[in-house]
Amino acid sequence: MSYKQKALICVPIFLLICFVLMWQFPNIVSDDGKVVRWYSVIPPLLAITLAVITTRLFLSLGVAVGAGLLLAWGQQGLSLNTFFSEVVWFARAVTITNDGIDLFNLWVILFVLFMMSMISVVIASGGIASAISILSHLARGPRSTQFITAVMGTVIFIGDYSNAMLVGPTMRPITDRYKVSREKLAYIVDSTSAPIAGLAFVSTWIGYEVGLFNAVAENIGLVKDGYSMFFDALPFRFYCILTIIFVLINTLSGRDYGTMRRAQTRARDTGDVSAPDAKVMGNIAADIGTENSKTQILSAVIPLTLLFGLILGGLWIDGRSWLSVFSLSTWKLVFASANNVIEIATTIAIVFYLTIDTLFSFALFSMSAWQDALSNAENVKILASAAVTSFVASIICARVFSKLSFPEISKAVKEGLSGTLLPIAIILCAWGIKASCDKLLTGTFIASLLSDVVSPLWFPALVFVVASLTSFATGTSWGTMAILIPTAIPVAFLLDDHSYGITTIICLGAVLDGAIFGDHCSPISDTTILSAIVSSCDPMHHVRTQMPYALTVAVIALICGYLPAALGVPSWIGIVIGTGVTILLFLGLHRLRHD
Figure (cartoon, helix red, strand yellow):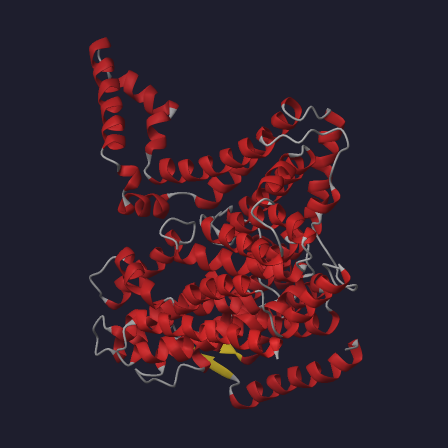
């Protein structure tokens, strides 16, 4: 479809939505008394419209961020001073935030930079080639290759960023060899990263989710901690659970449909794993290689093992506040306060005893201990620090084990860094869209628009849909959670007659799952973009092929999960039925293909 044809379809839809909102819902008053205008939906709606028409994601996001800046400027008064103040606000929002100083985004950028560079060096040193040669013994065809990729995505549960950054580049050469399309690889990476991170007891997500649950429990006067609420909602995470099941069944069946089938057919019949018009970013795994590098498995094993070890160890130590034991200032205080050598020796012995006692009491295997650690740890800072350390280790391994020269290592590092420039620019724009939505209260407008329909039977499904729309429009699952958990959960609590009932518990899961589903379908989501980048897939092609599958799972989750659960049907029955429907779907595709 040409630009003109897509514009003839998308532009009228864009204008129609704006006209209906301006006419029927000119403004909405939020719970805290703020007036939210209808045009708050323009930045994300404009970004999505332009992305669909032009397929130029950076341009679309840039225009949308500019529109958000202008609309926010208009709210503050059209003067030169207010314009510069809005520019400063937006600049801070995508870097250090406007609530004090928060380096979260900067740590994420640092993590991406050093992870891509580390992977680039590992590939150049032959480490990935060694790992691939081992995996290739298990991957004997397109179907087994896809299944192994899905299993890897499920096993790596620490976080969505680290999952995507490891699975995509590692499996890409194997999927290319067996003519698995880049679109399918990106789908498997994206559909196992966020769902498994959202479900895992140990991940970078759980601290954030539990923090939101704690806040809403305090708000509604519920005597219950956030961890208990997380585990209560876990059986009702229908979309995430069924997505993992769907991916595994899909890869085992070897059957596809819709736009994904066309992509797979192209790759199988022509050998073109990417479409001819694909705009591929971050293609380091296919491009970087050195003729003199020796295939050394240690060049991959040591940096990657160090990465995982530092992430897990860092989360544990930082979250359990054990860093204070190793702090120089702490020991200075000990020596300063001690009166003699005996007191110093006694203090050291106590610290040593407590450390050994904790290890021997199997605290490392305590779920509650890990939950406390993840809740208190500086998650993204630890990820970035682990990436930096692993990057240095990859350089040492490349020199020692693979005998690469420093010019060869330098070339690999430069290639890795250059491959991150455009992706990071797009991620910054995606954060700019989030900043626009925060400034204009877009999520509040969408949530309030659909909050009048209140029925205990339909409300969990409605919450899932609203969370999906909000996440799709804003491109952020975490932002959607922050908007809707304080908004929807009190309503569910009210529908349960001011008690912590089934409607409230299902809605907890519905918000989290809807946020991830909308994120999967959104072309402005940073995780969606990142999954495409690490798979060397055009982001718009990734969205176009993934959306039918995500929509299928969402419909199954609604019909087999949220609606029956609201009637009191046990959640495990909904999951079993949803799994059965998925199996029947692919059996039907197999029969149709056979006929």
